[in-house]
Length: 397
Ligand code: SF4
Image 1 (cartoon, rainbow, N blue to C red):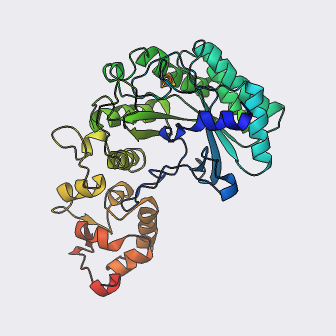
Image 2: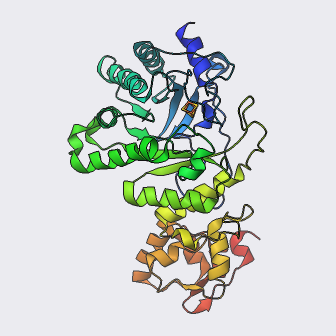
Image 3: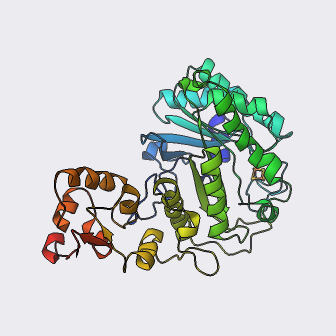
């Protein structure tokens, strides 16, 4: 198989990995619609480029990201996974230098500017991790690739391999898939939650604390992310968000990705119904409320089944429960209180704090000029002691 055909074979199911895709957004939004996670083809000539995805990097920059496996041969049998052992499809494998050479050419021709590299497990976690490290090493040293690399840590990898990955990559990740041991057993009975998945994430943080930044790629610590198969193990949003919050607080996880379960033919979960993709969106919104807006997990408006309502934005649902009868005074509230109001984001809260040092804020039009979505915020605000009056003309009717 020529290298391009190998790449096409290997990348065919990579939409399951959200990686740096802009889906879910990097910033909280109450209005954002769910973007397609379909791969992007850049021209008819490049129509086979189903492996290059639009991606947003942690610094906000947009790039074309090649997402691929090094090998789709896997000895594990995770219930949800298209690459599981024994499933009948054509497998493909790159040698590390073969992949690095191909990617380097793609990069030089402007076809891809960064790479997300994962792999099925073949010959154990240590051997597979070595292959991934070799590929990244060849890219950095032989091809002098200075762009973005997101490298997967394999279940069973050793601590010195994690360190090496951190010296080569801008981001490292290991997918927890489920929020705890019990739930993981329903998805991947041969993966161990604590030893194989959580421990490498702990090592990343231990290494970050012990080793100075200049020893890492570009003189910076790589960020860490993880991914969950949302709904695959019938877990609740509360379980997913509790684990995400713990990881963010204790291991400085940059973010969690949520991939709504959908059944794959010829897997043990092929008859399990797909999870509504809107659930992903609500989980992203809730996780950003916790990470960036000072919300605690227990603040979120979970229903009795411990899931977030699908029909309602979690920030709006919280405000309807808590702020309708106790509106926030714009001229006195702290940053955190302001950010709890729908329509006021991080920048809006900062702008309000600056503006009110100069003058009192008395009407919605002043808030609008500060970047607040005034119509949305109005029901939950007091402006100098008075309930904000929404003027239809202000918002164009
Ligand atoms: S180890 Fe990874 S590639 Fe292999 S079956 Fe499990 S999820 Fe799929």
